[in-house]
Structures are given as structure tokens and as C-alpha cells.
Length: 309
Image (cartoon, helix red, strand yellow):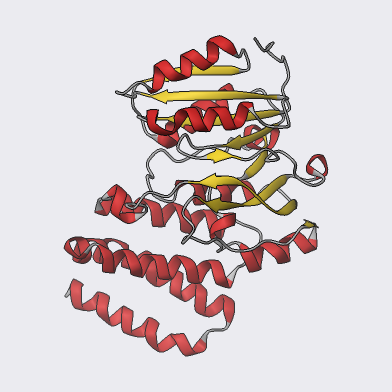
């Protein structure tokens, strides 16, 4: 039986909800790591299958594993519970249907930066992720790097990252429990506001499982949830110290794609969010010199008048 480390270097936070099919593989991959100075915080979020029993069985044999059981409150709440429980210097999130390979914790010069990141590998060969080059960015080079890369999936998703617990706590950074899709993007935008260095690693030791109903098809968001997400994401971005044309373009395109996806909500979502969307386009035009988009923005203004009159 492993002894409980009073001050582990890494805290692994894993929300668990009806994950009995994947859970053994996930936890075994953590136990088999080359790095052993960690704690694993398993938050059972009201599972109705055998997930809780599996978690408790592992905890009985390894004192580095902590199990928290709570009523179902969603993944953001579970991650926040884990943050509050974590004791390590570094926090990393591993979903219960994913797993990691043996050198996951080997991040170059991790103790010299505010964030460590590596790419991940999809468990399905047909899925791909953006390539990364090994590098460390700090100060001005970090700001320039984030402007060019903030829009990429690998810098917005929760997996394969190492965050400083002190930064999270000192700035009270938490997952927004009112967001079910893209909550990790908002979380990391908040985190990026308070750091100025990053270690980027080309290794892909995080194995990401993506179900067929991934994304919008999985969550069936309401108009209110869409509106809340866009409002929070846009505000989080505006509070960052750098302007990223590519990230603003990402938000605009995501907004338009959600309108196309949820046709039954089109009018309500359009009417409730278009004022903010117009302000976003105004910002886009003025901040990045997109005079050619002025015509499009004016057309949108007339479109709003059409609904109001």
C-alpha cells in the first residue's frame, strides 16, 4: 500500500460520472506513471453505475487516491470541488474516460514557468490535433505567442496542462458552473490573464477519447445557456492584456455555427445575442483595421432593426 504524501508535487483532478467502462484504464495509467509524487482526487458526481465502488476500491489500496462523493452537479462543479481539495503545487485535469502514457509528467523546465502544456492524441486514428514544437515563452514572447495561438484547440481545452495551484487560488479562478460547453475555454482565458510564461512540449502523452456525439450534439444547450457562454467568453477575452485577431475570429465563427446548428432556436438566440455580437464586430473592425467588414456590420445593424420594428 502506498503512503500518503503530505505535499505532493502534482494534484490530478478527475471528475467521474457513470464511467465504469473506462475508469480502470484511466486510474491504472496514472498509477503506472514514471513520476510517482502525485495525488489523485476522484470526484464521483452522483454516478448511478459502479463508478463509486471502483474509485473506493483503488483508494483502499493507494493512499495517494482521494475519493469525494457528491450529488450530481456537473463537470464544472466537480472540477471546482477538486481544486478546493488539491494540495499539490501543480494541478492537472484528467477526464475519467481518458488515459495517459508513461511520461505524462515530464514537462520541460516546468518549475521555471507558470504553465506547462503538451498536445494530446485522440484514441481514434482519424482524429487529429494541431502540432506543437518544444519551446519556452516568457514576457513579450509569451504575449506574442498567445496572440497567434490562443484560438487553437490545444490551448483552450482542459486536458494535457499543468497549472500552478497558487495562481488559481490567488486569483480565485474557477470553472463557471453555468456553462456546459466550452467551460474550459473560459477557465483558461481567465488563467492566461495572470501568467507570463509557458513551456510548450511536443509530446502527446494524453490519450483523449472523443465520443461520436461530441460537442453541440451532446449537450442540447438552451438559448439562455448559449447566451451565457458567449457573454462570459467575450468578457474573459476582453479582460486579457493582449489582442488576438484569430481568437476573435474563432468566437465569431463559433457563434455563427451555433446559429446554423440549432435552427429551432435561431430567432430567439439571434435576437437575444445580436447586440453583443454587433459590439464584437465593432471591436473586430476597429481593433484589427478590418474596414472591409464595415459593410457586413452595417448590414447586421439593419437586420436588428428588422426584428425590432
